[in-house]
Length: 541
Ligand SMILES: [Zn+2]
Image: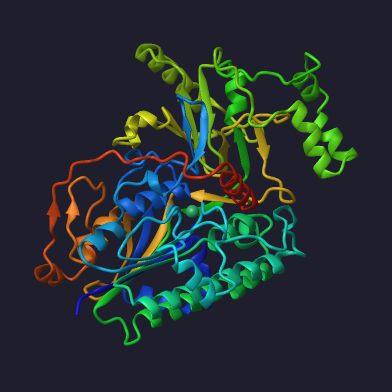
């Protein structure tokens, strides 16, 4: 009999919420796991964005090895954005476990669409276009899953528009998110019962959605913090999450944690979101980017429309659908960039910003980078007088690997409270305070995620600091699977009893880094549209 491994992903999971939820008595199972295991902070990737982080987790390599730094990758050659997908990733831990003869069940983990062949089953997660897509491996498992769990869904809002989450509608929203957790738990239990995998990972995305939408109500450092609403969210959502984790653990290990372990982990943490910084608009203001005006009957109309704030005026006069239609004549999407003139392009949606310097000459490129970094670090928010940009990384500082050339030249990390929007925003100034009534991102990502690990060989120790990249080599070592030499993280041997390694020596293999085949055209135009719509619904774009 060999060891088993259960992994539970809590997207955006952070002690900033989990600790008060434990203190409020709403997560007793998490507390019990923590009391008997090793736990602490799990540092996210740079950038701390869901696809980058879960891609790095599954491969054990930094985003430069796959080219995945955001929900979309920008091709400098084609001047076009593509939604990322599983084909970008190199060999995953699921493939490595499979090659070692172990079976896997992988449920709803981001960056697994399209599902790639492994020994076991995959049900893909975030970035899956829809239930109509082939979202399982093997393909016929989809029918079986939907028969066993007819209400299975990837993650969607059914009855609620994102902009309507208020004190009145919060109950509907939280209940939907809790229901998603319950349905996912049934699917997880079905995979465990029917396949009995050696390695099982279940991922919960709704924690991230809840925290984006309701951070101001549940976090004590926000002026809108409301103890009764925090209590409600803890009781309804986090208690459901806790009992679901317990059910899954009990299904996977019916006879207590014997020969195996449970690892709970997140891809990043959370913090308060106060202000958006429009990086694309800053580039225009600084003269690095030029937007072509839309023309109607040959006349450039965008500038005049912006001056009179046409969007606002039409917002009062027209129903939303007509508003969007009419406005798109004046403000085309995607924004039309004057590529011959522009020197720098920005992308990014929800946390860090990404800059591509459109210059082939290395000396000129270096000069532009230097000046842009200096200027960005000097940006002050007129509302507070404070700094906006904490750090700007050159790509070589944070990325290594086969995709270094395709990575953004600069990664712009905002100060606490700020997020960066890369794309040019019509009618917007540089700073946009986050509006409670209209913005769905009232919480934003923070680099500090969390982890808890308990089970065979694991010691009791709190307050540990680890990196998300440490997880892949540690999990492979735990299962006795060889660790490739080019993984970026470290095996966290100190989390285990010293005797554990005597009986389970760590094996390493030399592996040449192979370039992955980043498939840009995985999604049909219709599917790409669905992916975009889903990400927009969730407020991720
Ligand atoms: Zn995430």
